[in-house]
Amino acid sequence: MDWGMKNRLSRILNPATGRTVMLAIDHGYFLGPTSGLEDPGATVEPLLPYADSLMLTRGVLRRCIPGEANVPVVLRISGGTSILTELSNEGLTVALEDAVRLNASAITLSVFVGSDGERTTLLNLAKAIDFGERNGFPVLAVTAVGKDMVRDARYLGLACRISAELGAHMVKTYYCDGFEEIVRNTPVPVVIAGGKKIPEREAVELAWRAIQSGASGVDMGRNIFQSDCPVGMIRAVRAVVQENADVKTAFGIYTEEKERSLAGRGLPQQ
Ligand code: 5RP
Image (cartoon, rainbow, N blue to C red):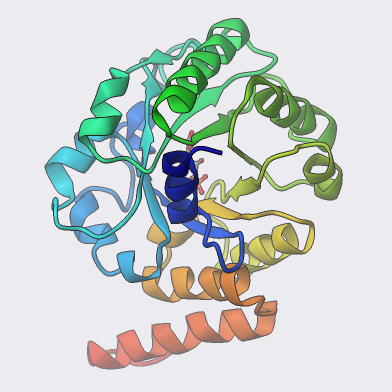
């Protein structure tokens, strides 16, 4: 592997553990206004010390994140659709030399296997990988869930394997029963998305299950920045991913942080 590629990958996947806590704040690219991301800069500022990398669009990166921020960037380069239309018709939204200008450590895009946009988005992935291989940028393929497709190991495993076969360096998918099978059949690191907001303990458990089943970390958004204690949540998830903490220990980290934060604001502890 070329030095540049290796170096960038090691900025995403901690070389000591081979795992990552990626903080995803790219939701607005198709959802528009997103609860918790009204002011992305303010949301991520206290979270950055606990994130191995930040996944976002170039618009939010340029306008909301200070250039001095010392965090590896995973730059989203796909989009062009919204929740009002056929989501799977994504195209590439970033001239790839802009990833160089923005000093991205990796680029990322969605593939919609099993949807109208399957062919286009898989060819987008291939194009991004050609650029990545030429210029030393790892590519994270996001397996978006096709319309009417069940989020099971058979379907997600298909999307992950196809992405790896096309040359993706990492794949993001959803946790599901039989996740070990997906990891076994995907010859590159697999990280999980958190999905819609669920109770904090369940989100910690989700991360723990994924790690036990061979995930190389998380690319988590809403279950961190929409939590009632985002710092507590990212610290808890980090403990699971990078320190092999069990659910009780990690949830304890969240609870303590929440109590500290309430006490700091002079509010009664729950
Ligand atoms: C959307 C994305 C999101 O970044 C991804 O879903 C992670 O966020 P969350 O944990 O909120 O699901 O790639 O396509």
